[in-house]
Image (cartoon, rainbow over all chains, first blue to last red; front, side):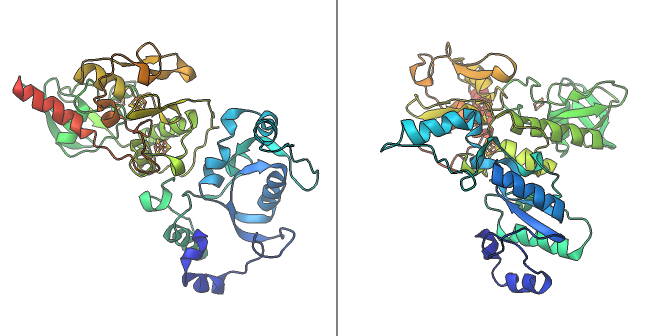
Length: 163
Length: 235
Ligand code: SF4
Ligand code: SF4
Ligand code: FES
């Protein structure tokens, strides 16, 4: 949503890029030879793990986009509680309002990983864009530098503050 | 008091005998990052953010507890120091659960400010994700151990300024926690006067006002030095 705060600059961006994959676009498989990927969210389940490895293999510049991707953030709140099994048991069965059961649909509901991991704990990351969410000017500064080629430098409160 | 002349970052400065490098640096407009140091209470050299290089000294020295010496040559902003400072900050983030996005201190946090200043855009170490408690048994204040950096500013301000010593540290290493009285819930502490000085002193979101929500904990730790100075003038 914060990305949409880029407002009219999105038109400018659209002139320079071709959007080849997005959760909002109806594209099933992550394509080959991608220049830049903005990766949102931490690595929490088997599907995330599979996709992030694919993204890394097929992308030149991988950007960890937002606090969840960079740190795990609120999605990693479950980590101190230990293995996912007992957590699911507590939430879906013991504290369920009605007769609860743990969702179990192999191939549909992906299995949770033992711990929620920041992206760089799984694959190498080229650029970090912290923020919850990263404010539009921060996203723009990063993308402009990437479009210009050369090294990307993000420093100072406006660019790298968490939260 | 005798003057001491020496250099910091190739700049000739003068300090007073008995003064620390940190004090002399500040008087001369030179910034040295600090975290456990708090004006108004004794320095303990715990966090190591203020480490400086002194030519001829084999080890790095914490500026907040090292006295100035005539002719000493101090460097406060070398590549080596910046590297160590970033490691220290990253380890502090990795050691507890710092989720800035939902923290009471977000935007007003000394740890966060230090991370920005040192250029920390991610943490290279594995997060420890420890189990930490939140104690809201006190009527006015709460303590969230997820955010505590064990700087002991609360311990020192309670002991030295309020004269009570409700706070202390129990446990070692990763198990170390600030505690109230004999490690009982804060609300059951009989020594706490509810003065709120620990709340003023805390650099992070660890000690907070009950009812404060995300980003709402703003405080001015310089008030501690103000209180101490005001008392000194009176007595
Ligand atoms: S205490 Fe500071 S660094 Fe830690 S979560 Fe809160 S705002 Fe972030
Ligand atoms: S509670 Fe706050 S002041 Fe006390 S040791 Fe922890 S971070 Fe420091
Ligand atoms: S400020 Fe000097 S060691 Fe913490």
